[in-house]
Amino acid sequence: MRTVGVEEELLLVGTDSGRAVARATQVLRRAEVLAGSRSSGISAAASSTPGSSIDGELQREQVETDTAPHHDMTALGEELLEWRVRADSAARREGTRAVALATSPLPAEPSAADDERYQRIVERYGQIGREQLICGCHVHVSVDSDDEAIGALDRARVWLPTLLALSANSPFWQGGDSGYASYRPEVMIRWPVAGPPDVFGSAAAYRRRIEEMMATGVILDEGMVYLDARPSRSYPTLELRVADVCQDARDTVLLAALSRALVETAAGQWASGDPAPDVPTQMLRLATWQASRYGTGGELLDPFTHRPRPAGEVLDLLVAHVRPALEGYGDTELVLDGLARLQRVGTGADRQRRVLERTGSLHDVVQAAVRMTLGQEGEG
Image (tube, rainbow, N blue to C red):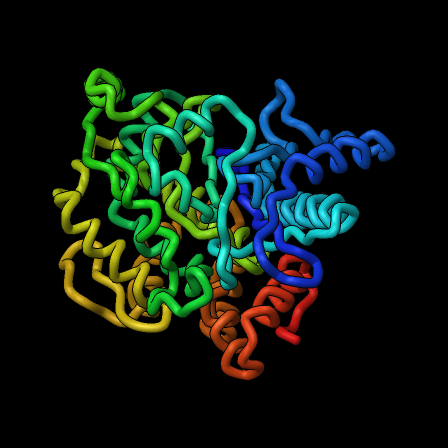
């Protein structure tokens, strides 16, 4: 039975201003103090065991939480929400809030963390590094081997744009509407190695590609292979990195359940010798752009015909594709209920735009997102 762990990047915003603030160092220090006063086994800092941590990221305006691996989606959801509450509790004591927004609605001026690697990245990549303030959700699904990871990746890659669409939560950029449901991928794609992965065929072929890329000197290290999905460098998992951080933690659990079922299905196809879909990476880039532009509110590209279809139909195709795996894990009802909720209330991007339409204030957009991050329903 495959386990699932989730990394969430959270934006730090001023309690009163709603603007991104560079307080990660103080928030992480505060989180460490608060963890020391609790009896819970969850640590505030990264440890040698997988997951259950809060740490820094490229910019000082964000932090990252990381759950332990879970078999049960209910337990995963509980830990996800607990980490959101803990991150926000530490942030509030430093005059900030931790919010699940994939971009800052209000104008932001990011500042790189005081970490040697992050400083080198900003120095090397200039404006790309200086402007990089986006928050993603990375789902880690356990695999049995490197070859299984690549076999599953080769067969699951065509569905990554669909996962992006349901997570869309970044419509605003530097104080204006980007026109996209998820603008985060448009920021991410500027890096030298980012976006949809190719078909690799084997773990050995994947390693050769990484070594070839490293030999160019263009990327600093393997950590800069920012593909939408990749074998994890740290854990025995396939890491699906395509999604925005979701405003509603229930959507994160929906994403995790679908991701596990997708990896289970793809790994089974690989084990059976079924060929990977012959879909060029350029077609996946088109599908990713379509998902980024419209989320679930318009049309997505069919993963196999590459023709536009209503987003709901493409989501139904995904569910049908992974349904045996969902049933095997007991996640069918959770996924169907989650997709029905998504159809009813929309994505995080839809929520943000509704608040702006009603109030005319991006500050109110941020405050409503803070409440939703903590599981407090309603948009204010």
